[in-house]
Image 1: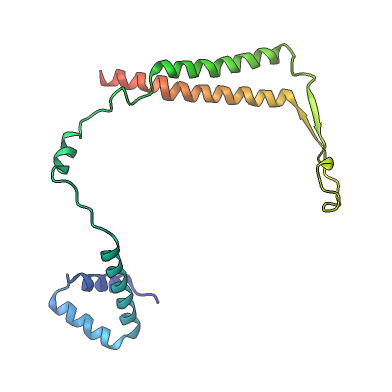
Image 2: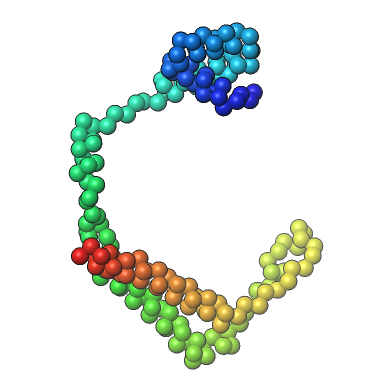
Length: 173
């Protein structure tokens, strides 16, 4: 059943007891004649009762507001941030991996490395009747993708763990 938004809000206010006496009387008159509205009221009352009894009410501690107000200007400590030494080691590792594979690529190490993946050998012959194409995998393309991925990771690590803390520290000084 669809009810208008205004009627829906009136029913919720009726359940909460926040309607004036005249509004409550008018709504009760309307409920006597409208079966669909009465059914919607019963649904809302059931939901209201379920939510009120099933969910425990949590009360904040007495000094909650005081603690919040004290911590408004609190800046996160440097101990919470990852130490810069570990970040630089992680960055150095990613860069060494990228430079190492780039050197191997430049020397032609992966130029002649190709393989063919025959998917027909892997298929169950009784289930698949059509032939599946074979895939040629070029190691040079695969290694280029690894190098690019390493460089992207290195830039993300550099930004998040070195540059961002450095500039935040400079900004707060």
